[in-house]
Amino acid sequence: VPGDGIEAEKRARNLAASRGQVYVSPYNDPLIIGGQGTIGIELQRQIEDIDVILVPVGGGGLVAGVASYLRSKDRKVEIIGCQPENSRVMYESIQAGEIIDMESKPTLSDGTAGGVDHDSITFDVCREVINDWALLSEQEIGDAILVTLERQHLMIEGASALTIAALMRNPLRFAGQTVVLLVTGSKLGLATLRDLLATSEHA
View 1 (cartoon, rainbow, N blue to C red):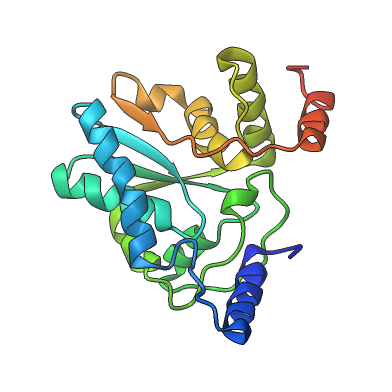
View 2 (view 1 turned 90 degrees about the horizontal axis):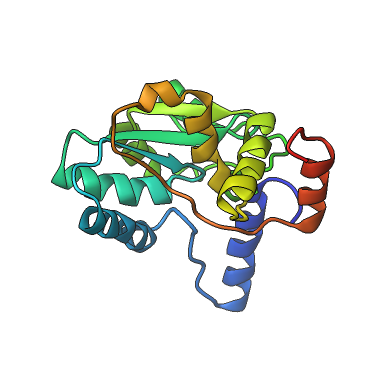
């Protein structure tokens, strides 16, 4: 469904109901949150004493799972939620103290774009576990995609670029710390990549 992701979720829910199927939310489900929390288990097995972890945030399932697990093991871990300025529904909802409806503008970070269910169990968890936020501009997201491609030879999508963009914005803020960036996917279309290359100094 074109447009806001929340509309796609509503349609999927309605289709499931009309066909006698089960709708599974991509974030508003305890089993989904638990599954994503296994990333925290993997991180703790690989890295000792994580100081900061930057996590892309859309509906909040990923950060709820990962942060809840890591915080259960080490209360000192700092959790930074990263959202695009153009679609920052969870951030604004937490500032308001309740889940709000707000229009999302187009963003390269389509994996985190859209609204949040008004009954979402992730809201309270995000409010509790996220210490700080980074709201990234489209320019910053695009630059992070191209820098990662150029320097790491990795193709990443906009949602993945959020954490890298946050680090690029203020690297001194993280100096001397063990920092983890969650890079979540690589679904970037050729048309989007061409547009980024055509308008960037990295071209």
